[in-house]
Length: 260
Image 1 (cartoon, rainbow, N blue to C red):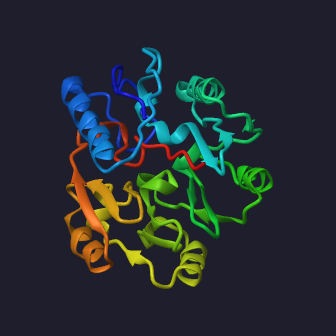
Image 2: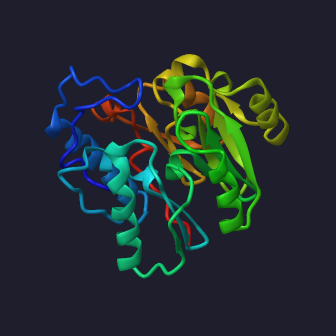
Image 3: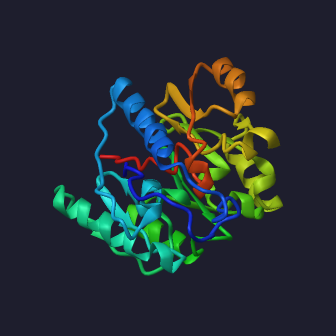
C-alpha cells in the first residue's frame, strides 16, 4: 500500500476524476488508514511504499506491478502522468529482496488489469492494458492468461468490474455489462457459479474489492453485495473510501497483493 499523502485530482484520466471537485486530503488519509488498519486487524502484513509528491495517484498501489510465486511483472502505464510510478515500484521490490523482476515491453497496469486465480490469470484490455501484455504475462508467469474485453469506460480496469473471491477455489464476482458479449460468454463458461453483481453495486465500485478467501473488504455503498456474499460463506467488511473514489479507485486499487 501507499499512503495518500500527496493525493489530489488535478487531471482526468478516467471518468471518475473531476479536477473541479476538491479532495479532502485529511479525510482521504483517514479512510486509507482505516483500510490499512483493518488488514492488520485481520492478520495480514501490510508493506508500505513511500509516496512521492509528484505522483498523486501512487495511493492506487495495485497498478504498480503483479506478483505471482514471488516473481514480479512490473507495470508500464498508459498515461504519462503515472509513468514514474512503475520505477518506484520496481525500486521497492529490488530493495526488499525480490530478484525476478521484469520491466515490461507492453502497457499493463498491474493488478488493475490482472486478476489471479489458482487456474488462470484473468486479463483486462480495452482501455489501459495492451493485449500484447497478455502474452508477455503468460510467458513470464507460465500460467494461462484469459483476455477479457472491457467495453464501458466507467470500468476502465478489470479490477473495477471483477473480483476474485477465493483464489484457491477459482471463485469470482463480476458485472457482466462491463464486458463484451464474447468475454461475458467466456466468463460464464469458466465460472458458471460466479456471483453476478447488479449495476448499482458495480457503479458503487463494489467489484473493486479485496478478498482473503474469507473476508471481503468492499466499498460500503455496495450494499446489494452483502447478503449474496454472506450466503456464499464470506464475511463482508464494508469500508468507506469515498474520498479516494474521486480518483477512480477504492479498496482494490489501494491494495497490491504480494503472492509468494
